[in-house]
Image (cartoon, helix red, strand yellow):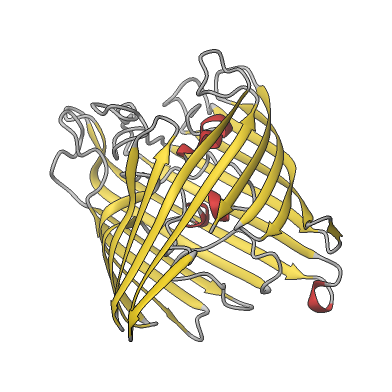
Length: 383
């Protein structure tokens, strides 16, 4: 859970959004044929940085991404996004063949985000806060992705979105519970009661800075036979969550600002079996869809307010967030151990999610350990 907390999340090993390439540069090759290239970068100054030997303060580039997309036909596209992390390694973030004949029905093949909660479908670039939430613990081969097939669509004037898929799954490793056996099944349903969310495909965001009035409720679930545990002691993996986002422009044209409220509730099940350690048999815990799933209940609640007046080049958005993960009784210690995290800070928004600075105070209380405090100054840029 330490790796799931604020410190590792600020180190950018949290889940992240694989939206189609940011159209920094677009080259057209004829009708329905084009290539786009963009970049994304996040950096921070963090006190008690876990990437240092003694958890000291450090400034670092959290991640660097290259977004690429191509269209070959009216209904056929591809996405290839790469990510370079602090350890110097490059990983394929997304590699998708997209067959998109209509809004109501589309099929994607390759590596992509699995149907899951809003935070995972946001990723750190499209959250309202800088750090990825510790309560969002859906497994993935890399940053919330998995290899498989996804179908998705939008109907009812784009207010209802669905997505479902079959994926390689969790613990595909010698000694793991699911070495070459069972796939992961995942699905999500979402309905927008006010304006449709102005986000592409089945992706989401936790704030739109007043571009629309949002009241969205989502329900997601995942299931995998023998998805957790070791080869000797296996258990089925099940998880579900419900999440909601309310964002309202106050006054005509957001004259009095924009209010945002977000919440999520999670249930994770491991069939009474403790999962193997995160990254078991891999070069690093953050690589590979291996281990680290905990049995428990979790929730998240956050609120923010975008002040309508400009301060210099941008606007200020104060925010508060609280998270809690409660472990299953007597499975990880006596009673119900729990991990909590409280964030309070503000965003300085210059160009939505494309250019934003964040100051955040964090109090992190891991189960069975002493609470710690940290301060974060982060920035993100996408082009």
